[in-house]
Image (cartoon, rainbow, N blue to C red; front, top):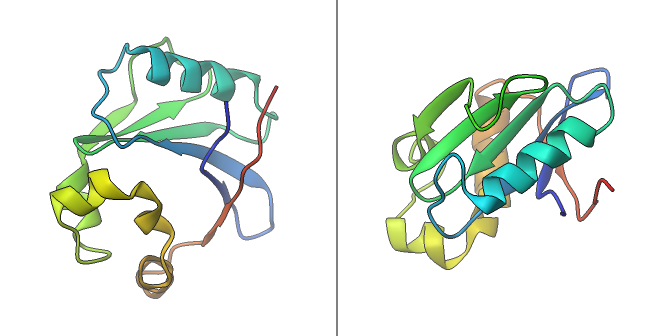
Length: 122
C-alpha cells in the first residue's frame, strides 16, 4: 500500500504517515485495516498514522489495538480552516490537501510541513 503523506519532525525524523480516501470508510473497513498494517510495519520512528476520508480524520498510534483510532475528527470541519473546501471537491480530488494554499495555511499556523510521497512500506 502506498501512503499519501509522510510528516517529519523539525529535525527531519519521520513521525506520521497518512492515507487519503475519496470514499467514506468505516473504522474496520478493508482499506483502514490495510493502512493500520502499514503503520505497524513502518520504520520505528513513525509512531502515528492518519486515515482521512470525506467524513472523518482518524488518528492511530502504533501499537494500539486495531481498528480503534486514538481520535476521530470531522473532516469537513477541520479542513475548512485550511482551504476553501466543498464536500464535492474533497471527493473529486483528495490531492487538494497538498495544494500550495493548504501548505501555506499549515505553515502560517506553525505546523511542521509534510512531505508527500509515492513511497510504499513493504
